[in-house]
Length: 147
Image (tube, rainbow, N blue to C red; front, side, top):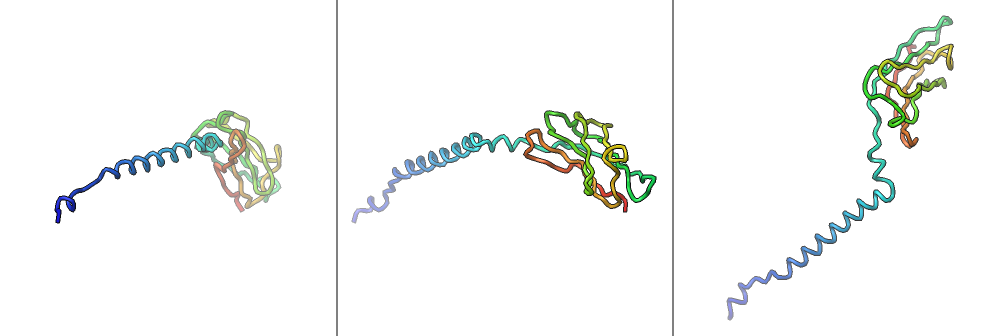
């Protein structure tokens, strides 16, 4: 019996197999990355909602049961044409008004008898941001009118 044949380790075929597996894996990853940018999915990842703070002030109207609402930008990002398509103050009872861009600290919008009408008691009021391309919208601030 020849013991040298039993103890002889032949590892020559392992290296080419590992090399082929690594090349295939790298090719698949590169194809996925290039494909996502070609199909336009790479650009949508970069679009984020600006961080802005708003304060709501509710003043009861003379007739009672309704409120004039003022939403004031109190800090955070300045909202302009580069990061904002539109910015609106909406109430759940259907009233709505748009902010004029740019919106920075101190800028406000109103829902009142003078604009689109007051907000009914208990209605939800939101500052709604829409992205420049119109694909994304987000409520930046939400509050309920007193009941």
